Image 1 (tube, each protein chain N blue to C red):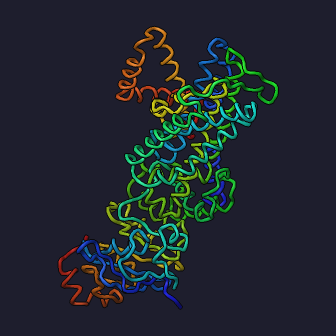
Image 2 (cartoon, rainbow over the protein chains, first blue to last red):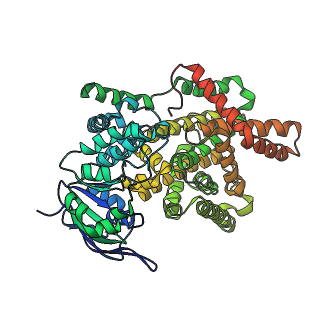
Image 3 (cartoon, each protein chain N blue to C red):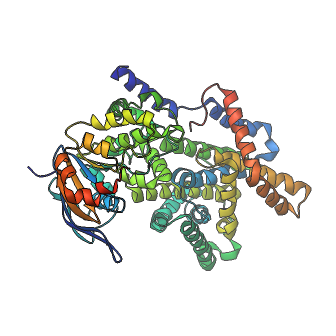
Length: 250
Length: 334
C-alpha cells in the first residue's frame, strides 16, 4: 500500500542557507507520527513545503502516491492535505459556526455559489454540526472567535483543518501556549482524531510527543537525524546529544 | 445534546444570520416616505440614492473582500458613458441603457481585475488610481465618441417601462433610482450571505487561512470585483439617465475620493454604510453650501477630519444603539 504522504530528496534553499536538506520522509496511512527538533531545525519550512506554501528547490512531495510538488495550496487542500498553524490563523470576525461552515462549503464545492443559502444545504448543515460537536464547540458556536479564550481558539484551529476532511492532517504545535487548565481537553481531542486520518504532529513538547506518537522523526539543521518508534528515539545517543541533551523541554 | 438538536440549532443560527432585521425595514420605509414628505427635494434625494448605490458597490470590494480602491469612478464613468451613448444612438429605453451600462462596467472590472489581485493595500490604491486616470484621459481624447470636454449632450430619455416619463422635479428620477438601488441592494444582501459571500469574508479576514481552507482566492476576488464594477456601472447609468447629461466629471478623481469618504462615514462591511454615508455626505454638502456657497469645501474638510478623529465612534455607536432599540435582538447581523 502506498504511504499517505512521502517526500523524496526534498531540498529548500534560502539564499545560502539550506533549511531543508535532502529529506526523504514517509508518513504511513493512519500514522500518529511526530516530527521533532530544536528551534531552527527546519520543521516549519518542511511543513510549508508539504502544504505548498513554499516550492522546493529540488525533490518531490507525494500524496497517496500522486506527485503534488507542482500544486498550489488550494489544490493540495482539495486533494486531502490540511494543516493547523503554530500561530492561530482564524477568521476572528466570524463565529466558530461560520468558520467551520466555510471550510465545509468549500469542500462540498458550494463556495462559488453567490445565490445559494448556507442553511439550504442539508449536508453542509449536518457536517458543520458534526464537527462542532466533535470538537466541543457547540456551546460557543455563535460567539465571535476573537473573543474566545486561547484554548478554545486552538480547538477551532484544529477543527477548521479537520473540516476539510483531510487524509493527512498536519498539526503544528497544537498545544503551544495553551494554559494548563485548558490543555487536557485539547490533548483529548487530538488523541481522539479518527484513525483513518494520518496525523503528522510537529511539536516541541515531549510529554505530548511521547503520549501521542507511535513514530518519531528527529530533524536537526534541516536533515533527518534519526527516525524510529519512541523508545528507539529516546535511546538514540545522537538525538540525546543534539536535542534532548540540551534540556530543551519547550 | 443529541445530534438532531444541534443540527437544528446550526440551521437556525444560519437562518437568523440572513434574516431581515426590523431596523432594515425602517430604512427602506423612510427612503420611500421621503418621496411624499420632501417633494421639493427629489433631485437631491435622487443624487443621494445614486451615490448610495455607488458606495454600495465600493462596499462590496472594500468591506467584504478587503480590496481598497481610489479609482472606482472608472466604473461609474463607464456606466454613465455607455448609458448615454445607448440613449443617443441606439434606444431611449432607460432599462436597456441600465443593463448595457452595467454589463460594460462589469466587463471593464473583469478585464482589470488581474491588476488588483496581487499586492498590498498601497499597490492597490496606486493601481486603481492609475486605472481611474487612464479612463479619464481616454474619455477626454476620444472626443468623437464622448464629446470630450463638452460631454454628451442632447440625451433624451424615453419612458420607463413605457409608462413613467422623466419630469423636471425628479419625481420619476428618484422613484427609478430608489427602485434600482433597492433591487440591487437585495441582490447584494443575498450574495454576501451566500457561501460565496462567506468565502469573501474569509479572504478579507485571513487570506492565509482562506487559502489553507481551499478557497481559490484569485477567482473569488475577480468575481466580486466584476460584480462591484457592474454595480458602479448601474450608478453611472442612473446618473446619466436622470440628469440627461454625461461629462468628464463622472470620471474625475473627486468621484472616487467622495465615494471612499461616504463609505468611511457610513462604515464599510454592513451594506447600509453606503446609504447612511451618502445621506449624511449629501445633506451636509447641501446644508453647508446653503449658508456658505463659496467655502463649502473647507467645512466639509473640517467635518471629515473631526469625524475620522472621533465622531465616527459616536455616529456608529448611535446607529447601533438605535438598532438595538428598534428590536431586542442582537444587532450587527448583516
